[in-house]
Amino acid sequence: MRVPDRIQTVLERLVGASATERILISTAALVLSILVGAVLVLVAGRMTTCTASEAVYYFGTGFCYDPVVVFDRLFLGALGDPFSGGWSPDGQFSVTLRETTLLLFTGLSVALAFRAGIFNIGTQGQMVVGGMATALLVLWASSLVSGVVGTFLLVPFGVLVGAVFGGLYGAIPGLLKAYADANEVITTIMLNFIATGITLYLVSGAFKDPNSAANQTVPLPDYAQFPTVLFGGRQDFSLVALAFGVVAVGALYYLLEHTAFGYDVRTSGIQPDAAEYGGVDAARTIVASLTLSGALGGVAGAMYVMMILGSFQSGVPSYGFDGITVSILAGNNPLGVGFAALLFGVLKSGTTVVQFATDVPPQLVGVLRGLIILFVAMPEFFRLVGKRVTDTGSKVVATDGGTPGGEADE
Image (cartoon, rainbow, N blue to C red; front, top):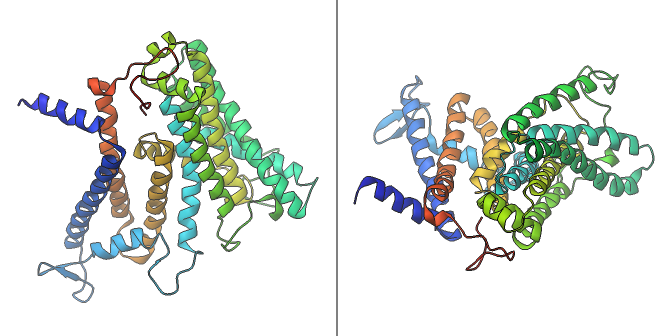
């Protein structure tokens, strides 16, 4: 068999892989990445100078870095050492869950747009706008209510504000693409810069906290922030916020797989021409998809303000861009986003642990994290490529609102 034919066969097999097979492939890729990473750690340790007492020995040779310790800290350290006798949910485990919570929403934001065939690179800007609006409007509303009642009213209100303003900001590139045929990659990237610039101007001027040297808004009162449950108040994490994320995963999955709007989104992403022929309003679907995508990004901004900082500050971390990686790892599947966000949250949290608990250089730790993400993402990447170049990846769109032969494709 010729090499091109072999490649074609492999791609067809990968495209047709079941959910169980894809999980096994991703697991195997994760194990392989750890093995390759262990080799890199050993090689780096061999090139480093250390004393005999500090060295570890494998295959009769001394190395300055121990890959077992590195990956133990990377994974188990991120979980707060669950097998230790004094495990507590506070500490690094709460950091991991905090990162996971925000990545749930940014990952869902990107995944929804990708399922519609739209490359939303603007989740970061939508998160910034949603966070800024949440900080200002919740601060205003906090003067009207207080106490436990205030928490019950202000937390949902803040999430709603983030969703509305993030959605409105996401609708801008949607309208430009739908009615002006503007490239959404360019418009969303530029809107990221605009969001960052405008919020910096506002938070360093009209809405700046006069009692702080940092560019931030006036802090929200405690009752206007997410309540902590089981975790200490200084952990910047709330199980309530994580519960919002879990509900969002289930709701988006149901929306995409079991509603007419979800059918429009999926068919537009798979075969836009056939979808239009089947009666799908392409322009409306584009605007609606980017609006809902922006709303999810805006909720991430609300979580960042009401769970982590308690105010809005300039220099929001790049959770929106991390959401692109999470979405790719999940194959743009909302249910997969939950697991991908947890994996990415573990890697982000564990990276900090490795840097403080070992002598491994931070550059090498970054390489290990990138290596794991690359290995886990590549099978799904090739599967998406295979959909483009093989007949297996195509699916006939029915004009009666269904897909012939059973369940809809992703």
